[in-house]
Image 1 (cartoon, one colour):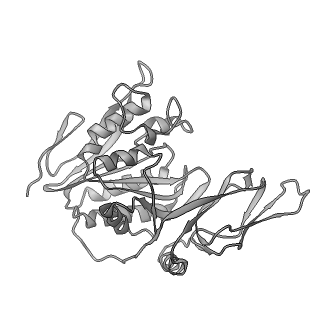
Image 2: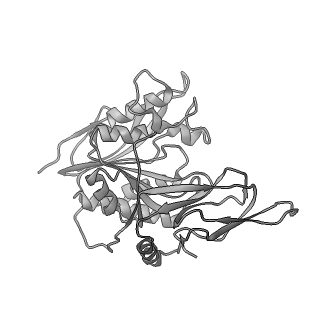
Image 3: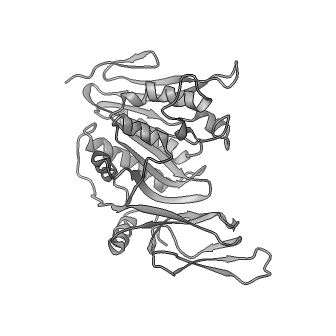
Length: 339
């Protein structure tokens, strides 16, 4: 069945056309307008609409690169449906890093937004009305925070079966359950009954080629799963599902010497790091694992202070299966995560 024309930013895009658009955003000052860049690929045949976006915080550069590579490749492919790709959602956050919004705070907490609200709420309102309400599926691309490297994984709400199936189709090694608490963007997509998955890998403000390639392949895997692209044989990965992840906080300040790597399985009371005095005046402090699980996040900053998150540990019902699954996945990667 032939696709119908699509209207975004007062522009009509005909079936089979691609377009680069600029969505007007709230002005910073009377003479400083901002625009959200949008890439639309509108297939000739009718099908679902997939929205892909990155840089919600303004520093997730891996996501920006994934989005651009996906659209470059997808332009030449026979699509059914529509792709709306936004490499930089929070333009202010990118151009004013490390400040995310003029008044501070987080953009994800501003949803669904308000036409007459704060700067962040106005951005959220425009995005919800112009983009989100056109979506059948949504993929958000994230990284860890600055100096916090994250093992590639997908987050979704396990209680929503279509979303969980979408996360599985992405083919990341780990899928982690998330709740709606504290994330108004996720709550908004739930209210609109739009499946949302979040791919997170690497760290903020750094390119990670392995994480980028995994993200690009994952997005195309989702496109095949929802019939935007024809299905084709893939190297099937059965991801492991985690109900809980928790950061281990540093009890002492000093120089961090990690003894584990991303993807490594640890047992309770294993020695996972030592912390030394930067002035060399005291003995090293040994850090032991408080629980069994898999290391899915590591602080890459050598100099740490008390209370800083240093290791993120994911818990699984079957840790032996988790270990074998991640090891099998790691062997297929060009650059191994597990040393």
